Amino acid sequence: MSSRPVALAGWGRYPVVQCDLVAPGSPEEVTRVLRVHDSAAIARGSGRSYGDSSLSPECTVLTTRLDRFLAFDNVAGTLTCEAGALLSDVIDTFVPRGWFPPVTPGTKFVTIGGMIASDVHGKNHHIAGSFCDYVTSLDLAVDGGEILRCSPSENPDLFHATCGGMGLTGIIVRATFRLKRISTSRIAQTVVRASNLEAAMDTFERYKDSTYSVAWIDCFASRATLGRSVVFAGEHATPDQLTEAERRQSFARKIRSAKRVPVDMPAFLLNKTSIQVFNTVYYRLQRPGEFIVDLESYFYPLDAIHQWNRMYGREGFVQYQCVLPLRASRSGLTELLIQIADAGLGSFLAVLKRLGKESFGYLSFPMEGYTLALDFPAKSQTFELLARLDDIVTAHGGRVYLTKDARTSARVVAAGYPRLATFRDVRRRYKLHERFQSVQSRRLEL
Image (cartoon, rainbow, N blue to C red; front, side):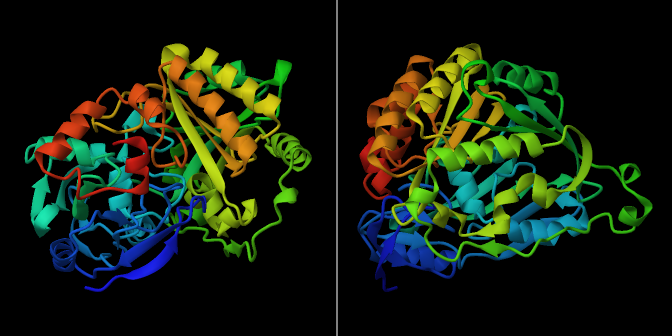
């Protein structure tokens, strides 16, 4: 199968890398690619990882043509599909039948293979864990085109390395995972305004039994209002919580007409003043109370704006996401937010979440504590700030999220991922370390 040279980037549009791209249409074609192309390769799904983790100059394997649903057990709720199937298609197909993903990231335009490679977490990690906790098996194309079945009982070491392994153990071609039952397509949402970081974290702990919780956080707030937030707790609404008209359409979804950012926005529009104004207005507009909302607006608000990544201009942006262990979260987050506020590079897309127990994947991101995610324009001042944030995260025993990363160092990753040596051993044992590489894996010496 022939490849073609393409300039590719992640969702942050930084960095841009010239890659040889190949797009197999079946698992058999994936194996053929791996037999014919003897260079380093990496899988790429819908391109929603932010940095350079799905980029390989020698061979980038696009999986989006592997998008078929293969089997569904309506009793157990288990779905088998190809790795390029989109989460949005899973939602469109199974929500009307009363099923929902057990874990979902903040966008539905991701592939199932990408969700496994990132071991994505959602607003319910403190209760439900991460996505790979619900993956019962996966089929992995490895060097030479062989396909290995991986699960907690079959090749378990390779399964643990693949879940959260950033595509560095092979090309996922199929997977089976469990869905969860829901009785409506609505969310019973509770909105709480928190005047500072301490109040926000106290709110999270107060709602620790809620299935879902997430906070928008104002990164320009300082002093007494440092870390002021709006916390959104949620549960899947039951029919008795709906009006009579809503009950007649329990699984109807309000699919809004998607807006599109038509051009790359001028970089000067996203400045300290404009973001401060946005943050102040957004905080004041969030009305505290309890509301019934559609799952689309609760889980995927940014999906209503296609190509929103163009808002940061032609140079792109980087997302910084870290997690701090629970014991160090208050002090660590305080230091991080002071640095961000002092730098004047605050983000209007800043999210705080409470995470639960550490995931089983050797390179999985979550650990019990708090995770903070922010977007910054890709410029020199940003990289200087993020280096300081790295030092704070490392000093507090935390780690950065590889799926969002485009610029951290091998030193920071080695300090934050204590099972990295085990991951490397599995790669060497299965002779995968030279065959499956990305720009990120080389930069971070994974």
